[in-house]
Image 1: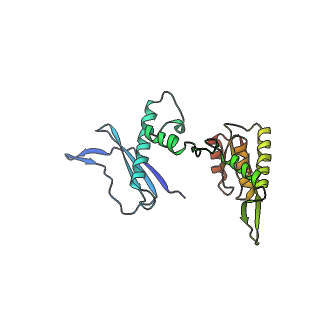
Image 2: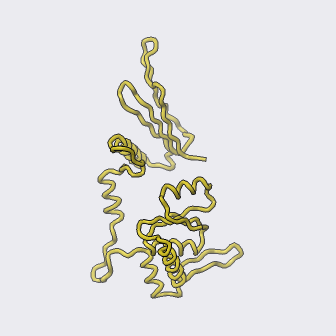
Image 3: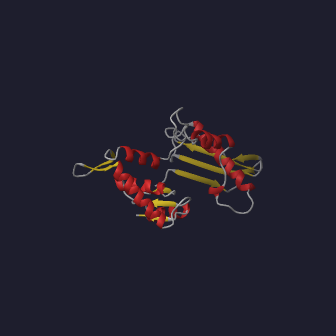
Length: 230
């Protein structure tokens, strides 16, 4: 099951027949078979490729598709200019203004309130540690159980479990720059594991255990994960 399709037409899309020039054109469709389709074909006469996006308007806004088209065009341009061979994942597809907005505006650490004396930015694991110190018995995580009731973790328990996980990860050589795959069911322990990875200075990649094995293996390989927790 898939929702996206890419079509590359390699046959001649413009030709002369009986004195007439025949060209390939995309016909408008009221309904598409997929959420998004990208068709690309080469126009030999003009020496360029034509690309057509078809998309579900219930899922994508016109400005979203314009941005995706710009990303795709920029990515193809980078492919023709980069020396040697590089993975497509390492090529830049964002424009300068878009990158500045994402990195500079949307991801900039929040400024502290005047006179509070707080640091400009505190990661989530630090904030949870502070709450654990101030309100250790407060409930941090609640998960309903199938037979009734709920499984709860207090902030103190959550912070302690996360610290234990971080210590074990560091002992295995996990640290800054590492990626840890967490292939676990949704549970309070998963939350503790996520925080533990952050406390160790690494990044986490949560995956559902019910995903196909080939898909899991591909994601683990692609991200260069140093460890998989199951």
